[in-house]
Image (cartoon, rainbow, N blue to C red; front, side, top):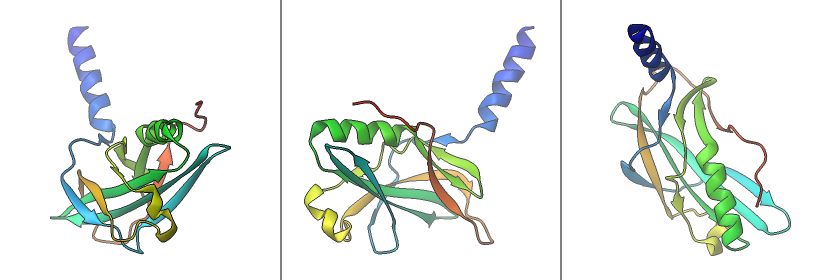
Length: 144
């Protein structure tokens, strides 16, 4: 029974995607970063900018966010990022984007271009062919 549990636990850990760890680098936000907006009616909005880059042969996910509407929207934004991840071709490669850089809310009008994002390198090799990437969340409702 003990061997079965250990084998089962190992199988589960190998099948999951990586959780974001320590920030491995930074990268300047440019016009090519994807832009997502979260509306926290009636309190404010959150702007998320993110990009996938090649970091020495491995995929790195870079991003930053800003919120308007005070501390409550920053908390809701953090909760969203903790439940968010990135998929490559439909498969999760990174979970928990809480490491994204906190950006200045007064720079939302220019999309944070020129500000610096935080990046985490995944253990996923950079694909040789075209790949599609998407931001996803495991939660759809956030209470604040």
